Image (cartoon, rainbow, N blue to C red):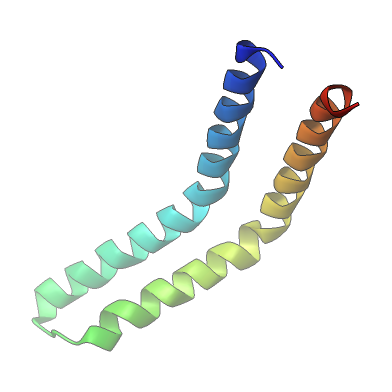
Length: 89
């Protein structure tokens, strides 16, 4: 296995990791900002008010993007395995 193949495999791994994490992180970020604005306006400082909406947003993101994420991950593993097959034999 050449140095170039190892670097390409590492780059592909980082790209797929970012692509899979981005929707969940964005939903959590938007929920956190909205809850923070609500707390700043109403001056309500309750811990569950910050935790529960973020948790619901992350669950919603996983429900919405879950099939796409699973398909992307399976395709990545299939592509990685097919590229590793000649090296393993």
